[in-house]
Image (cartoon, rainbow, N blue to C red; front, side, top):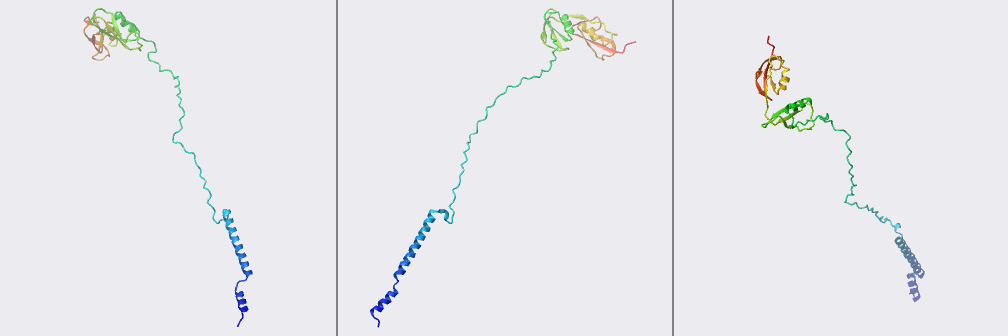
Length: 220
């Protein structure tokens, strides 16, 4: 049978010693301090974290393009350069013009046109007189050689006598008839000599009438 001291000693042996308690508290304090320091250091230095914080995205803002087109540069109108090429020479550059024939006797007017190498056509009227009343083209109009000028005469065509053409060279009768205001017609051609004519020689005709001239071999 144990006494009271023995029980008390046994109880004391089962209680943790004061030194153990003090040592355990000190270790707990150091551990908590280490944990707190580590947490604080992690919070204070984000670079120590295992994950790298996302980098700030770089946004490049391009200048907005206006939909309004840029104004076009003003256009300048250049005056056209003067032409330096000379115009094509006119066929009337020789200076030939229709002479002034109004009031002139129609035979004299015909001779003047012939001298200028111009052709003529007499147009007789119903009035009286032999004078020219107008021409077409008009006087002063530029013309070329060979141009036919119509000559309007106040009165009717005068009468003329038909010349004798038989045995003449057919190539020459046109000029002879033309002097009398008549025109030849060749029903059988123009080669050879005149074998017959209508109207006959000595007959009466009027200016601008035709004379039929038959041409052929000279009769022996």
